[in-house]
Amino acid sequence: MTLAPVVTMPLLGMVAPLPGFRDYVLVTADGDGLLFWLQSMDADGPRFLAIPPARYFPDYAPALPRQVLADLDLDDAADATLLALVTVPAEGVAHATANLRAPVVLNPANWRAAQVLLPDSRHPIRRPLRR
Image (spheres, rainbow, N blue to C red):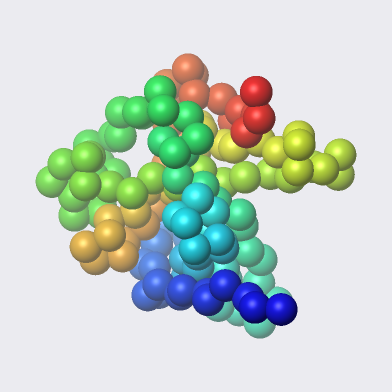
């Protein structure tokens, strides 16, 4: 059996830590850029499944607060990488949802990141991945 290579990116610098995290890395989970793990560097720390929401939801284009752009040293929101955290319930992957209300915003130039709670209620906390 051949396993796909795991690509680990540099340590991310969170502006404000996610619950349960101090330090973590972004790890590709599929090699195609469709699935990632936000992996805690703590031995017993959690990991979160994350997706680039625009790849799954082409209409997803939230307005990012100016303060977030400043905190991450981003001049333009178009330069940000967005990730949505995914929940897979006990019913299985067919019922997985993405949190579009609170994306992780990443500046790929300096690896600074922040989870942002968007004020726009158009973006749900639990949007089904399958339609």
